[in-house]
Image 1 (cartoon, rainbow, N blue to C red):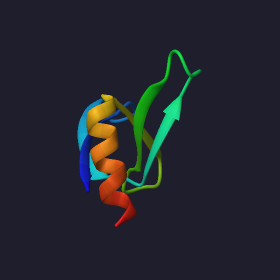
Image 2 (image 1 turned 180 degrees about the vertical axis):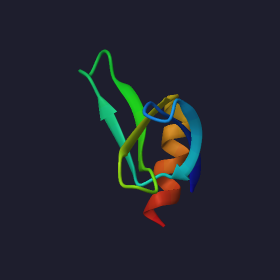
Image 3 (image 1 turned 90 degrees about the vertical axis):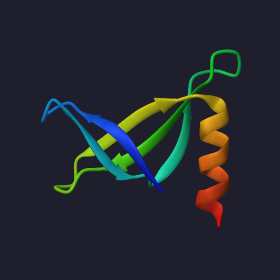
Image 4 (image 1 turned 60 degrees about the horizontal axis):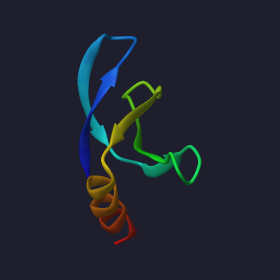
Length: 62
């Protein structure tokens, strides 16, 4: 699955494969994110809504 990430070093949006669906924060203040990698191996993180995150997590399990 592809997603648009913001590459801080290149200062531009890049499209990359979603490698993992992760959460940050406590139970009351949970944030949902996608993890990806650039072509040269740098990490990318994009915060998304819970509904988008749940759909992607189901797709990654397949």
